[in-house]
Image 1 (cartoon, helix red, strand yellow):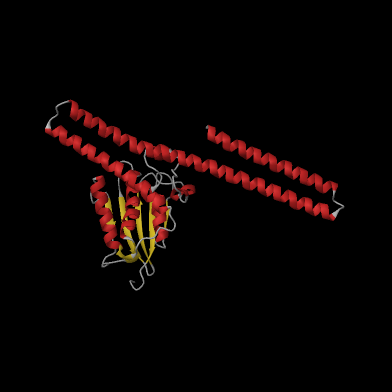
Image 2 (cartoon, rainbow, N blue to C red):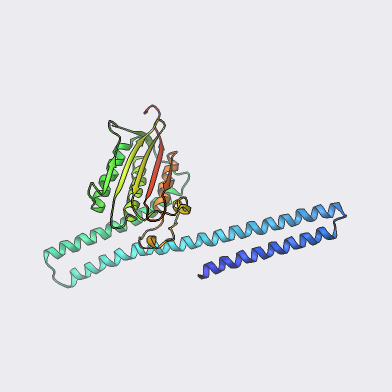
Length: 300
């Protein structure tokens, strides 16, 4: 048991003891003043308020400790995501400065440094987007967006970014469907869908089989991202969309991240009047993430 877990256990125990003492005092007060109506009623109300206050205090205290633990995990994750590529870039630059290398090695070094720079940029963008997502009053212009083009763009981008074949990352659009319009911000929708696809790639393991399916209904547009990866326990399907949250499992520890991707997706979905949810039959059985957006009026 970690120090933080011991602290949580201590405050839960302390709260339980205080509630038990309050209950005992309440029972004693009732036993003494059971013949007097006014003191009896006042005593019951007073002790009920004390018990309610103790319970609320304990709940909020435990939640705050848990939130601080998530913040610490986030800081550690971001520090790692920033420090590792910086150290790698510095190492390659020092090598290029201190010794002669062939043109082929230089090209290899440049490719690695560019990949590390992309990793740095991605981490910084995730943090910035999470900050914007947390601003409830932040507004962005909404226009008519074709989700067919958004899905195609995100799939093509993911294939290039992760070096995937068309078989590894498939796109499924209903036959004869030329457009599926929603009212939204194109950049934010690309961010949301790209996060879902990147997440599917990260948690697919060595065998990557991902399908991105567009489904148009009368009043909404659904985009489903399905993978055959590590899967999710049922009790984690809603928690994974919380900010900084990481699934506590061995498979997840092997994947680095900030715990912001799915939080950003949920925030963007809410801003567009839609929702995102996850489905999984359990660990090792893959996952399906569905982004639902209201269809633009008159586009059915």
